[in-house]
Image 1 (cartoon, rainbow, N blue to C red):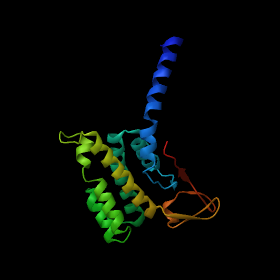
Image 2: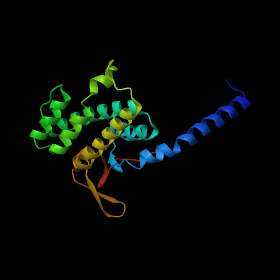
Image 3: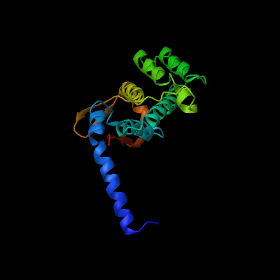
Image 4: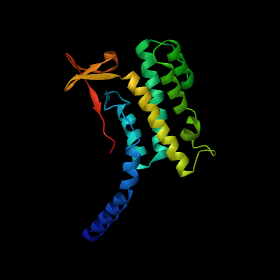
Length: 187
């Protein structure tokens, strides 16, 4: 347990560290695009966290979460379309493309996110350690997630406050004419 002076000192240190990070976080956030709304499925928060971790500079976590998210999303789509799946996730995405569930751009984006999955999930010795390369890889993963989500969870806003969903069956119902959504922001 800390006393009042220790708590105050810790708060000042944390505020100073956060203030020092603001310019880099703003710069990273300015390079990221996200779907502002996605369905409120079990994997939705992880997709949002992936982008937030990238903006915060937590690149290992961002990359790993992007890979796990892409795996979960492939299982969701395969189940929704009753597509036979394999345990090989890149092959699963390619199958989803062949079955016309997703476009080639989405399949390629997903396969790219998964390219170094084993290195990150198992922390293999050859895992990338260079900060700038990790930052670039994390940004790439977040961009690929946007490519994937903007097609799979496409929507338009025709009337303020009303989403028109391209694939309503991908969105959990919130009752007659409504859907459960996950709202996003980067910070």
